[in-house]
Length: 446
Figure (cartoon, rainbow, N blue to C red):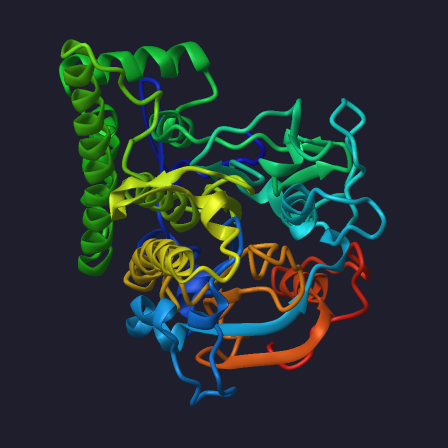
């Protein structure tokens, strides 16, 4: 464990470690005496591939009175908690003399602002990503310096895009210029990682016992939980009940999915390999666990790839049987553009689920969303053009009151995306003077 966890902030049991969310009863006395209790600012970067049907994304007006386009309509209830950002660009994702490979470059440069070395071998090279700059500075304060999750497995070798290594297409988090962070895509493994102890054998035994006897991880910390409940005020008791309910609901969803897999295997069909077959449920499950990790301060930094860049997975959940990448090369075909719009909308519906849940969680001096910065978007604007300027970006959360949300900010096209990252890093107390191709702090949004 990378930090010393206070015993009063953790429930312990055999192979189980349940870190608690913020509770006023357990806050330091000096903090409770203040009118508001300072809470950490969290940051998460949510990535979608293959560009966007921009005709249904970009608002036609700026400022607080902007229109919410059709693709963003599911965000209406949290509209005041987010802003649309136009004009920011990742120029290092363009070819710049390196030829084809825009998909690999777009994900590799998204958080780094560095041109990826064109290679399918082991000599990959790009740069340290914004999330890892934060993790290196503040990661010692939490159990996990950062959390990397996704919905598609990735490879660290092989040729995935016109001579670019698969590591570029399946990674947005880079802890070193040649070292991508592998992401967890299996919901069960992520759950066990979040709530397991540092003793791998003990944690594995606990997990096996829970599955065999259909127990909850909360059953393993019940004695600590009972002692805790007796010490809490009414408001904290309600908060801890909601937190426990969230954990239990995730366990029930995991169990149902695993039981469904068993039935598929018994019928002679091939079961999904470790992840839900329904992409929406997969995104929501991973999103729920990201929320638990941020809420309980297991980490303050997260990256979440809804899919790998260049993914050609069909979206059968919304009756789209063609591959996503193939559809993104629409050639202005109305049928393909409509399918792309539906996929974009589907992704935004999952984002809305995540943001609404964060906005419902009491975090002491506001909601969890109030005390976060959630950047959603990708490294390609129009999938057919493979352009990396005027990127589709949303920034949700108030960073503890530092962000004036509910607006459409339109910057001069070509403004480095990395300027936004420098400014976001400032909000978590990480001061760096440059990142990739940055030219300074982004003005106006903070």
